[in-house]
Image (cartoon, rainbow, N blue to C red):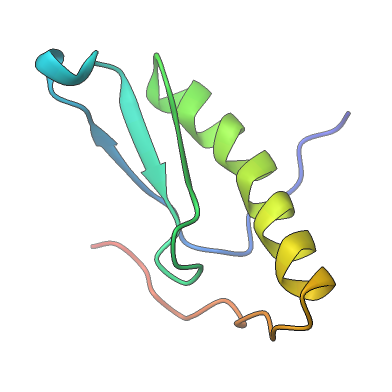
Length: 74
């Protein structure tokens, strides 16, 4: 499957070793939408699936899906 451009901002951060290490990836525009991975790249790849699932669930429940914000990390 070809990689698609992310429309939503994603924040990737290291996880503490006592929590298993690796990296988390959260989507500020989609409350509760997050994933993780062993590397930052894996966390980012995994969060793509989480975004799709979040949007699908919101639509199935009749909730509106927020538009991507203009948020950009400095």
